[in-house]
Image (cartoon, rainbow, N blue to C red; front, side, top):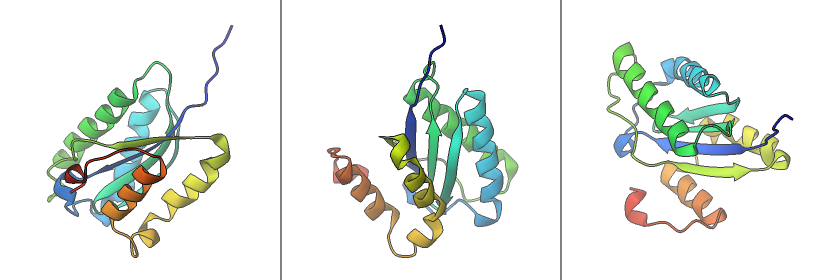
Length: 148
């Protein structure tokens, strides 16, 4: 008998100290690299986008992979690639933590649109304000010290 699943995660993580170190000129290459990491984890990428200081990913998650390992593998491999590529000279690393929010198939298209419009969205709202709003919306308790 086959196993079936539907595990969507909206994952968000930022650059170390929230420094604007993701060069827009090379972000598409970064997104393609992340897409390959996700495929190697037997998972499917639905949408990826971001701005200079953070990235949003909507992906399913294969049941054989833990969420923590999934995010760790993306962050470790991209950190190495970004530093070695020379295309992100100011990049020093990713923040320690991340946000991950489950979503349903009904909300998937809305989240895809939200991620697609990150550059427009962040002309009005900072990463910290966006992140705080998402944590609050999902009823996740948090410590303000770790958002800065």
